Amino acid sequence: MTNQREQQTILVLGGTGKTGRRVVDRLRAAGAPVRVGSRSAAIPFDWTDRATWAPVLRDAGAVYISYYPDLAVPGAPETVGAFAEMAVASGVSRLVLLSGRGEDEAQAAEKLVQDAGADWTILRSSWFSQNFSEDYLVEAVRAGLVALPAGDVPEPFVDADDIADVAVAALTGDGHAGQVYELTGPRSLRFDEAIGEISAAAGRRVEFVQVSAAEYADALSAEGVPAGTVELLTYLFTTVLDGRNARPAGGVRAALGRPPRDFADYARQAAATGVWER
Image (cartoon, rainbow, N blue to C red; front, top):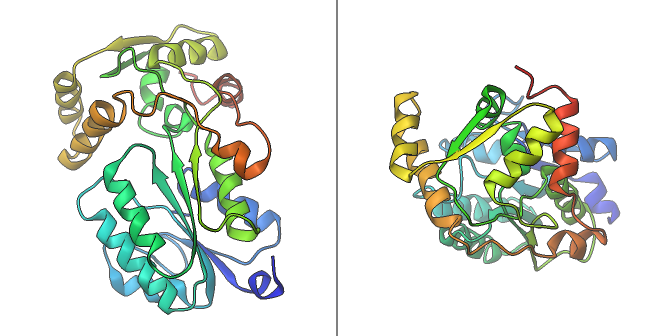
């Protein structure tokens, strides 16, 4: 880092989320000045309220952009593009975007960030391993039955810790500008295989059942999940998990010079926390 970058604040949007809080922890451990971008932060940030954007950008030199709920939702690319333009106008010189692998809408957001006028790095990530332990699938794992519209197509699940390590490197180090990193784990697993590894790590039976997309959507709706979230999850399972992302990529090694973490290691570490205990 240059002295100027060391003095500038790094803004982490989604700073309380799966990847964002890990980025915040690493930056703070390194002594970097960090500002958390979230609705509950000291300086609140809300993607839907543009009046909150300028205050969090004040004195920021770099930004980690994590869009909630997903870049696939309608209007997300335009919103991210508008934020990137404001960031550059306010003096931000480095943008790191968390993107989705195989999502056309995400790539539209990538292009707008790339055109904003700052140094940029794209973290094009596969399905998070932590979705099983820190998100909507954790309760199903605890209950011992995971029903999803996922069949024989494998996914190279990526560890959120790897994403955070790459993000911090891109935010603070040299050599990452203009890079699109495809971030995956070292091997691909079907969802039933992933659940099998979780079951082994947890030391108890966790069953996987394949259901149709319609059955999955109906079950979510019956649980009171908002329609927009149901639509997003159905899209991710039926479109993004159609095989386009089945092959592992080398982005973690390219960015960090080491291999990505394996799903089995993630499962053992998560099980050790007791997160899947009933």
